[in-house]
Amino acid sequence: MVASALLDPAPPADPWSADVLTAANINPQTLLATDYLNVFNEALMLIQLAPDAPDMIDELAEWRPIDYPGHFARSGFAQRDLVIAAYHAADPVVRTSFDAAAEELAGIVRAGIDDLMAARDDAAILVDAAATWSAAIEAGVAHLDALIHGRADGGHAQDEIDALFAD
Image (cartoon, rainbow, N blue to C red; front, top):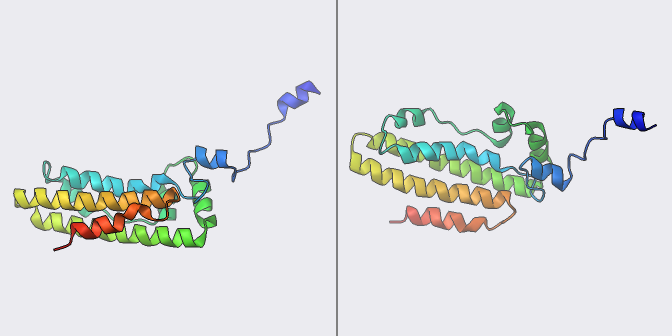
C-alpha cells in the first residue's frame, strides 16, 4: 500500500485556490494579473529612452496595444491558460472597468508616440514631450495596477492624467 501511494500522483491543486492564483501572479480578489502591465511598461521604457536615443522612436512607432487575453495568449507565460480563464471568470464590472482603463491608456500611449515622432528633430521639445507622456503613462499604469489589486478608486490616476494636460 505504501508503494502504491508513492506511485499515485497527488491530486491536482484547485486552480481557483488563492494559493494557486497568487503563485500565478493573479490577484485572487479581482482575478487579474499584473503581467499585463508589461504591455504598457515596454512602451513607457522606450518613451523614457527617446531623448537620449531618438532611434527608439522608430521602434515605438511599431507599438500596438493588445487586449488582456491576447497578451497572454501570445506570451510564454507559464500559467497563461489559467490567467485567461481567470480573466473571463472575473466580475464583469471589474473586467469592464479594467478594460476601459486599459483602452484609455493605450490611447494615451499612442498619442505620446505620435507626439514624440513629431518632436524627434527638436531635442528640447523631445525631452519635454517624453517627460509629459511618461508621467501620464505612469499614472495610467498605476491606475491599472490599482484595479488589478482591487483598489477601485484606482489611486485617482485619472485626476493626475487630466492635470498633466490642463492648460
